[in-house]
Length: 198
Image 1 (cartoon, one colour):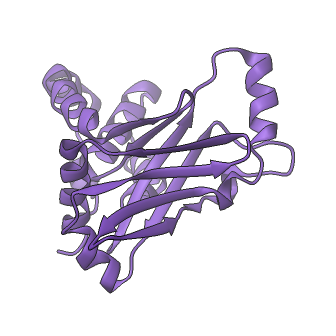
Image 2: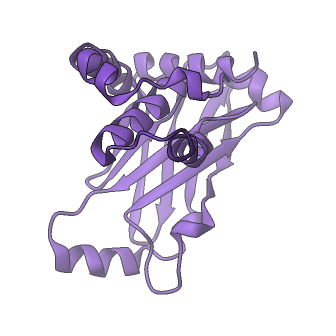
């Protein structure tokens, strides 16, 4: 997967001129990579473009202009770009009511053992447990934003690129859902995954 360099980032004035066009392009990219599971979980599967856009928007919002500060943003957000044989996703736990959110995020402790990427190949289902960012976890309750990594071995890589059936499964006692990707979603995720192998 291509990495983000300082030279890839527009300065704020230049970005503002191109922002409307860029936003339309990125929204179409995100649409295929946004996956809703149940009533509260939304997964955004990340790639170079989605992370690049997030950096540009952060620089714009914060008025960041120095090379040192821009490099800090690049280094911070580049952790979201999948590396070889990886799929990465940002999980948003979307709960509007503050009191219910506080309760639910406590109830969801242990979620890091319960989120799986799965695919089907030759009448066999393979499940890959999500790796959570431990910085987003504590003993009181989980964060409403989680960064997930799904790592594949060589066999899983070959099988996943051939499959037409894949999705996300969560089997937590407080949140139990399993859904398949639409085919166009799966193809977008497979395309990003293929790019990690280059």
